[in-house]
Image 1 (cartoon, helix red, strand yellow):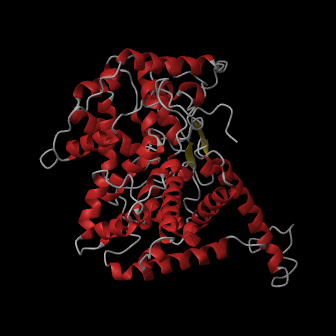
Image 2: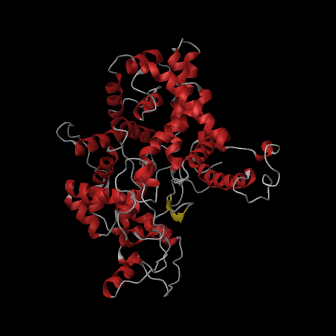
Image 3: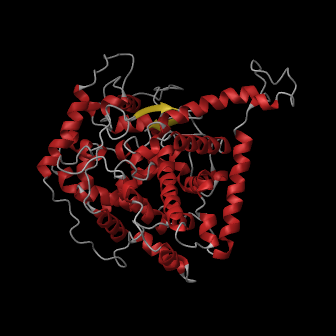
Length: 505
């Protein structure tokens, strides 16, 4: 059942455009799957060819997109003779992980001391104690899973929701330092969807054709959950620092993780968390390099990149584009490099696409446009722009790229969203015992540093609040009063989960 406040139409999409489109409707077209498989994977130099296919947007209608993603993410080795053995190995690993972490204490009643293994035991070795801790974690994950792509019937199926929850729970238990952070479900959901579509297409084709052994193993629907966990885990090897509150110098693996400072503000300590460092670098270096006028305008309005950019990067632009366009973006990101280096340039290209509307707008309108990104007619043109920005010598300048569509309309819509948000929320009463982070910083410059004081603001939260202009830095103004709501999925709030602060997306 859809949430009553959910909008299937993009917030800045004009009324006459189609709404509520379900990508599954057109996924069962008849094609020669065997020929497509051979075209993609048959020759010895297949790797360069499928990478180019992903970057050029040629996987949009492919029935083997999930196989390409597995290759891009190093889930399948370059040597195709090892594909079947590697696939079976990863599936066996997930079986073992699931068996280890998803337990039933009732089944072990006769295997443990009853003094320890009982529902009231607080012993760390008690299966019941672990069961109740797991139940709390699963409940938190399930809350997010229930809100995943609510406009699509596929994600409302109980079986799909159970798979999403089990995968995220197992990942959290396998990565106790990170656990689960909100937003991970939106990285997992497209993977589950792509695998499902490929499985459906394969089942349909296998009724009339004789598929190869590789196709039978790789596209076996019985291992939907296993394959999704493997692909998600590989993706998170790159994306993990963007969800972590730990400070890092250079990401070379988990051994590079430095000590977390849970109550320290980034501006008061050393290196910041990875995601804040990343979005600041994008705006302060890349945007400044490619469009100094836009860079100066954003700085003049005091719109910090973490206000909107943390969500863009963490979710790989998952809320900024419709699902079919998002999959094309992910094709290019994964095909380009497992390090997702292209993310930085897609970020810049998105800003440049609406740069005229941004430069012609005030603070409220700019924030509305950035938090509710307008629809793009041709997503591939955006990717071509990103490639050109990164390497203009080897990539052609895209044509018809600049955003020219009714600037007055988008400016008005952007401002309307901010005004509507403020009108629907009550400003908290002023509390003279609490001051904004910017005022606190100013005071610290005038007087001696305060010893051991804490502003009560989490690192990421303080980054966001201190980035806003003075008129928006109310002493006790909650974050949801400062940032527009997101009617596409859910509202953005700031909280702490488990081992440290995170942004509730």
